[in-house]
Length: 434
Figure (cartoon, rainbow, N blue to C red):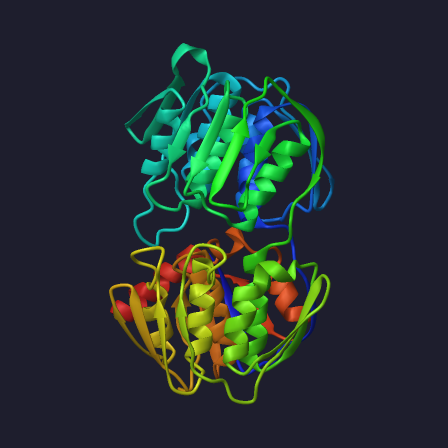
């Protein structure tokens, strides 16, 4: 029952180092299953999702060892084709990447339905469409996804995705890498972590071209060899600290980033009056004395990322005037709005559209991290509010942000991680009812 206790009214100053990209790491680690040899992966973020994936690989027979806090060595030479641990797989969304990786390696897979954050319907129909087109029989029953390549090996084909899907694009790339013949994915997603996965696989001997465009071509290969690869910086982690600096009116140098990946975030922050100065591998964010209203619509890359929508929502509570967010990716990503309302925010939601009446004074309150990015939004709001904010369900936040509290406190935030025993929580509930 650990919670964040945040003292509000702090201003962020200083610098922060960005970790490796979560959304790249959670695909690259399963991809190591397909490599015949030792993979050395650098810039791995220290988050619970990567820890669980590495544990899953170990359960399957992989040798895994950390060379330092962000470099891991994985040897999947003796991995067995067996059921992955159910309790771990059902906790993370990225467990579905094991479908493509295990189909490519063994010709069959049995995985759980993906878990992770719950912010709307996120079906895996496009994943299944891709695997079926490659020659797999796929069946979902009793909470498991069973897939088996007819004839023991997948075969290249042309696949048109009915909607732009990051997960499906990456999963099909994984499966097609060791398939026989050429696979072409049309209407593919273009996010930076898709490019990173393709670059990782290419460095291990794959032949993947066009990643980062809407047409990806994969020439199947017989085997992948070991090698060393460095994961790109995390676009969303960097964007979260950019928004936090702007919201608190601070000045923060955000290091180890790729500025091009942040262009859509930088553009929106500049519209609010925030100063954003780009350098070769860092960005300086200076908060404005008065934030201006903006409208935001989330879109596939290179549009504004859906993962940045909740942190941006927290900032828009403070901006003067009426701002509108239109969620262009998911159906139900506004659960965090009720938590912001507890702090005094005025927000109206109608389907995928949220209207923020900004310029209101936020006050500390007990709030919940409804999901990973919503949790980050609560922390940003708590730093800007007067009084104390207590954030529950912080395990969601720790799925995707390495040392979140430590990095923020180093820049002037006042956040404690306090363990509230479950018995004490139950006692409080009993007392409040009586």
